[in-house]
Length: 398
Ligand code: NAI
Image (cartoon, rainbow, N blue to C red; front, top):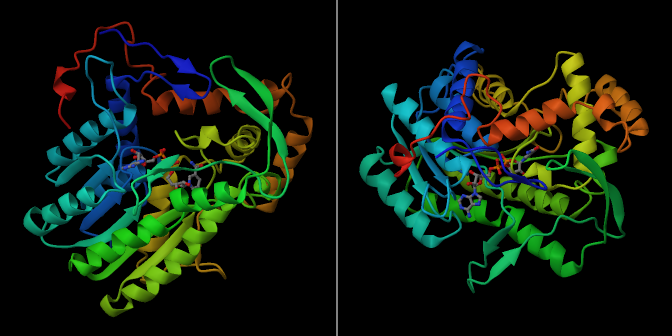
């Protein structure tokens, strides 16, 4: 099968199995030479392990010093008569292959992390084949919908402002243009639903379940990810439906933290830098900000991608030599510190003031943004021949 990129709006409709392998290999190469995670965990469960921060966490913890065994849970599709499947599928296959070559355990569960069935399958595996417990649980799910735990009915999140409409540009990656988009204020139901989908309820439920089954090791850590961002993104994020969901996530961390005290465990929310991931390209109004931010941070030598963020998170924050996890006044771990620097934000604000559909390619880092998006799907690697036939058989079972 010859596979070329197919993009519809903000969605990649194809992915390249060999290119996905390159992306995983690049991340592994980065963490091998970066400052190492000295006192890391041994047994890790990553929920949302196939892309973005979840995949980068797993790579950092396996190859960036800790040599952790890992279980990855993700919702992905392999190759079939319907098509090539999803990039995350190939990321899992490549990661596990590399980890096993290194003598590490890497076990993947593909299916719905919100389901009871998935909890039971993971628990059985931890008990029977993974040494009986985990010492880190990374909660990195990002999704637009989840089934209601009581009724099974599908609940959908809505990315909307609260209180009034907001307008901003979003990027059409298919046509390489900026488009003005206005979003109406969310209804109360939409706010509630977004909190259900992207808040902390499911994280609490996973930890409660694993704890109840006696599968959390003494001193177990658990993490989830959040975003705060500067003022110009607040209407669509921090003060919108997603922000409400994140506020719920932050409160959930405190709840879990208190519950883990008996086993000497801790729960933290990590505030990350804004990045191009499968999920973030859907947030209207965020793209122009990302274009300006990437340009400024690259020029200042401060830019980081998912893998740089995650390696720094574990090496310098969660598993520091002195055992202290640095937090802000709200007990949040801030690895968005470079993004939020006053000098970075001052320059970003200047660029944004001049950004229009005519100027965005000159003013912002559109090539970098699009390049990251293409790489998420295995495209744009110089050493991959995209005209060559790809044999999908070896990827048939993750
Ligand atoms: P992503 O889209 O790259 O990865 C999401 C993961 O969740 C994938 O592994 C996917 O398979 C999995 N998943 C989704 N639904 C699932 C289900 N029902 N069952 C099992 N697995 C499922 O997302 P990204 O961007 O890495 O986001 C992870 C977290 O980081 C989110 O909480 C997000 O809000 C947060 N974050 C993202 C930022 C960004 O700029 N991308 C910035 C700061 C925080």
